[in-house]
Length: 245
Length: 217
Image (cartoon, rainbow over all chains, first blue to last red; front, side):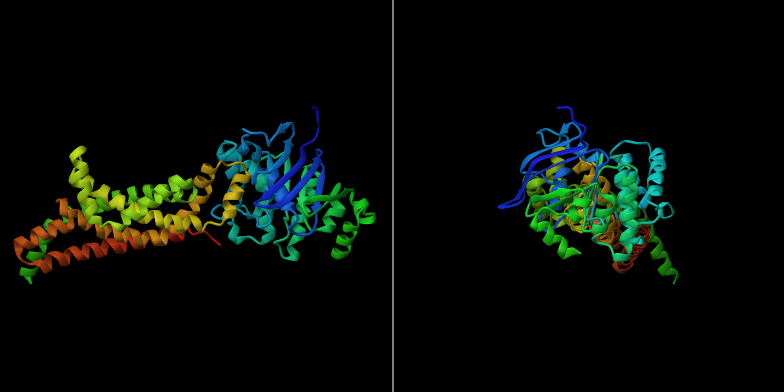
């Protein structure tokens, strides 16, 4: 069916052994939308992101990325992941590569770009996240915020259709979250489609188009930031909001 | 004094041509061992149940058998089928043995690469194989250098064992000359000095490599 959406999730389920972590989640992400997923820890938010880029296999339901059903049997998972940028809580930068090469390696080894072309593009991506002057440094020489910005540049370098952020600021010292959130806000303004799992309510309120509240493997409530913060529909959302603010 | 230097000269005349043999046996064995070792380590960790079991069995069996026995097996059994010079069968046998020890070295090194490295490599669209080759192994090899330097010295010393099948390396030659001059101390003492110098050079070289490629944490 003709559909403009970047990502469409239908009745997604995921179990680990006997434990069902995601119990039927449906979500559609439109181009340029910024969606923040909030909720108590252990409610399947990170698992949801891992299912979307097939790092873990969903046990049920279907996912479309643009017009391709990526949960269909025989899908080339590696090709799908190229189109989905992923930013990790623990950064996961490649420790043996410089900041620049962290961004370059995917372009040369996955996309088959020529080294000098990849280097040019990588420099541009590092510029976008304000890390040009640290291009030659190794991850061990960078602060957490700087690492995360390189992590974002690495994902951007693949020109993804959508970016997934898995608690991108949770491993950072409080004074370092700002620089990462600023980069994410800039991306949002530039029109990047983003799905963000985060506890940063300020970011959710200021930057997102939609907030999704997940608990116990379900989406309990979703709405615009204004609806969500000012007029939450469910009792659980109210409880959650009162606990975090 | 003159007596001493004349006898040293005789010993050197015999031993020096063996230096190249010792060095090339050692380097070939290390190269073969490196190849077998990395492949087996990768199979142990990523190869699934069957290939993993094959690799584990190789490692256990080969480490259980004395290197001399492996050398004899390769020389007498295999060379009856394929035409293999003593030099090559000796080097192959040492490499085959070293592969088992190196597989343990690299297995430990691969396991100490944080799992997030693999996940991040997959997330940018690398296949499993490419992620192992481009992200995991380059880090594992760096982490393995200290243990590998130790293996280097062990293989260098194990290379003496190929004298049992007549490969004219340092040890074999030391024995010849000692039985001719009846001065075993001079012959084997000089051989020992050569091994000491080789070991020191190799250790020094590898510590430079280690520093050069250290992962900054």
